[in-house]
Image (cartoon, rainbow, N blue to C red; front, side, top):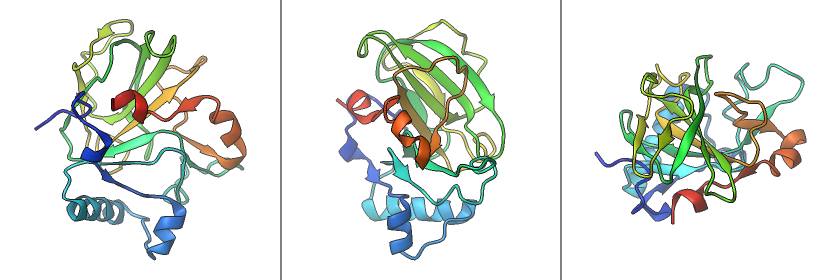
Length: 210
């Protein structure tokens, strides 16, 4: 099985996965369960004849509406702040650039990130942070401050028991300033906060796929 994010990959190697409210409603779909979302993802991969799917940057989604994790406050969070790469569980994840481990955590709430690794990259735009979430629970090989090298395997895609109950995928986010967050950072925001987060997050694709 090929690792995700090898330098030879390009965006065209992945099937586009659209989870936006407009597209899902246009298709008359209801993706309110694990099974319905998994079926939709697998169907898109099958139609495109690709093993992996990609999409989601600043996408407004309805899949969070029934989740207390995203809607426990007055502000509904439904804008996705990274990209998702969808594929089989156990798929290795290789780093696309050098860096060091900033922090890590197992965010174990239902529909949360699951196992999460955050890395710092001094060579990217004078210092950027990246998040790698929904990976398998085994974080014993990870320590704060240790280097990660381009091409190094940092983990594998988790299954629904590892990643908060989502179909297997990798959430990737590139952040300008992580401030005091450690092992976690918002991956979904409300529309009222979107203007702020647009100053804090960048589209990961230009950094991952050269």
